[in-house]
Amino acid sequence: MAFLSHREGKYNHAEEYFLEALILYEESIGLQHSLVACTYCGLGNVYLALAKYDRAESFYQDALNIWQQVSKPQHPLMCTSLNGLAQISMALGNYAQAELYLQ
Image (cartoon, rainbow, N blue to C red; front, side, top):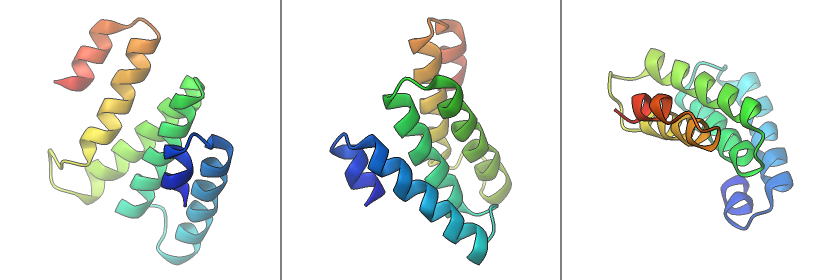
């Protein structure tokens, strides 16, 4: 539901669903899991769409940290976090930083 809500532009609903998922994950599998990283990316996407760049950056960084711990180097899903961080950098006019994230 979270991803569907995001796709439909219902960002407040998407945020609620993602946050509920985090609570469930914390209770069942812990916070160092690939599902949590995906959820963090989802929240990053929501906050990016709402131009809440500080919050988005925090969630993308958290997701990236998890990916680096639980997966092989250069895992394809790391790109989601890096792309989000690049989009934030571009939105803030920091094109050099965006380029670094995309390399």
